[in-house]
Length: 220
Image (cartoon, rainbow, N blue to C red; front, side, top):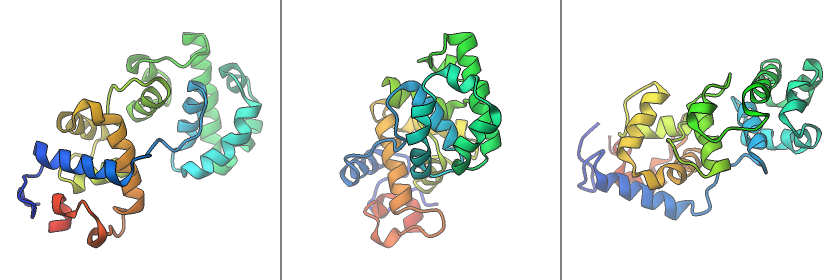
């Protein structure tokens, strides 16, 4: 990728980063994390169900699930086969049901059944890595301790020229170094929206993308 863009700015420069952030804010002013929840525990559960599943499908499942299971103890004490059926539509349901029971038992054993509000505590929980922890902290607690890196953020960070890493922890580190901290949470949400709407994996719509003049992938 060229280090200079058609707009005249350099890839990875503060000017390029800010221009992309500004345009994403213009395009998606109401962007939010799309999993439905009302409590930290509900988001804790929903994020685990969202692995390799659409947010729309997860929201359809949790609409009923959250009425049936209301505490960490409810999940930890659930019958494995019954919980499997309750989450079956999200895919990989045996693994997800077991993970919910194990992670919620950990909440009971270590945090009094409550979802903790720090990165250090969250990543100790079985099945909870930094991406999930960032989602929970930013959206349930308003704590921004890192940059959410899902498949869309992974892909677009490379197309923007912001990271050439394949490990999501290293991608996150690159993004945290480039993007001003006050934008970490909302920029991640908007990048996800743009990845779904325009900059998709198989055939990005570069010809109609208003970020094209600031994107090295659109200028190759």
